[in-house]
Length: 199
Ligand SMILES: [Zn+2]
Image (cartoon, rainbow, N blue to C red):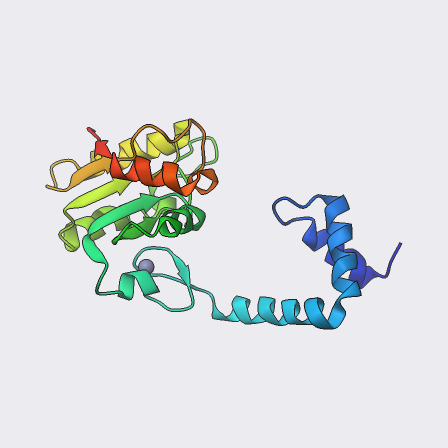
């Protein structure tokens, strides 16, 4: 249909969330139509972002600095650590503008089926960090899925007896609901009404 470079562009665009082959073709055409005002700046932004990305060695957040801006911010309470599955969840909580603690990004959930164990998820790092930094509270903000809750339970067991209060988001997070899809008010209510998690 088009040259191999354009085919390749469409194939790559189709891998983005929310874009199937049809919308990828439309996006590619739009990029080509707006070559100077959109396609070239986008290509530059992609290349620069790819160069600049750093994964925070403390919390697993994505930033262009390591430690990330949140870990490096002395105004953020280092004694409250909110545990999330993905960076998208961290962004969702940051959007509320109300959480003043720090984060720990697991990078997924425990899954025997997919061969994902604690070591693949920064869980040992979290437990070591909570002890090392003298955390007062670890908030488990994993998703309300079976995997998310299994992971939360495993972490709560790992922190048992460490003197760290372990809490979870209150009901209000729909079952299977990813934090990123919640509106800010619902997320904030779930965060504020958090309750103790017993291992
Ligand atoms: Zn960080």
